[in-house]
Amino acid sequence: MKDKINLNKDNCKILICCHKPCELPPNPDGLFLPIQVGAAISDVDLGMQRDDQVNGEPCDNISAKNKSYCELTALYWAWKNIKKLYPNLEYIGLNHYRRYFSFDKKNYFDDAVVLSEGEVKNYSFDKTKLEKILSKYDVLMAKPRVYPYPLDVDYSVCHVSDDIKTVEKLIHDNHSAYYYDFLSVITCNNKLSHYNMTVIGWNYFCKYCEWLFSILHEAEKQINIEHYNTIQSRIWGYLAERLFNVWIVHNKLKIKFLNIIKFFNGTVHKKIWQIKKRIKVSLAYHINYKSIGINFFKS
Image (cartoon, rainbow, N blue to C red):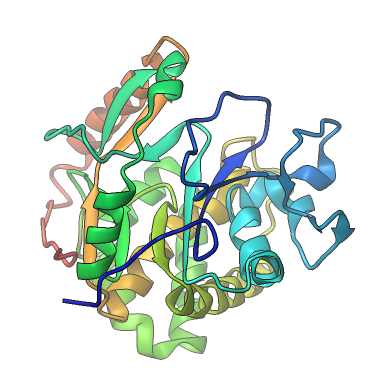
């Protein structure tokens, strides 16, 4: 048991990544920090913290790469700049404008609870529960989604298979201490905590970002995404989801998983399509791949 934790607007910030005008949840404790991602390439100013500025001035950022880095442009901005605004920061987190941690709703059959977009104004953020979690655990992550096949198969089916192989070789060559854990999570495991969402201590966060962005920087030199479609061009966000799980396992952090609340604009057709696609894929691969079901993520 750690010492009792008292979160406040000065020692904890949970980024809410926004790329367009949207309704945001209540923020009575001031722990949320809405941030406009891709601000450097947007014609719209959302009137919130930008991922390319600090106090209105240019800063170290990768905002212009948002189409391929997605929410990671906010992560990078925080790593390099947020302490200039909040020097007493001890905890950092990341949510999305329509994805938040669920403190009071559960879905036992999936990683998420799906609600309509209009209900975001009723989102209940429980600071007391978060304080209790952080007093017992090192990191808060999204409840893992369970696939019927290993994660390397899922990535190869839904994305570009050569990309995950490139990252594997980079880890083997440049971060060899992580190689066994990479194989354990990616090739011998069928559970993945998605969305790059977390709440984590600042020191852990900095170590993770240094590791993650060094890998992605090298991968950028080797992977040409010029002709990728809109979905596949989000490559670095997809890869980071996998790499975050690898980093957590390697560093043996104690994890608390929570469901995610997803706020959709009245329909879940896209999600249903994705589920049907994965069911078809699992049937096609059933003969050649076995869903191992090893759970390396123990809370």
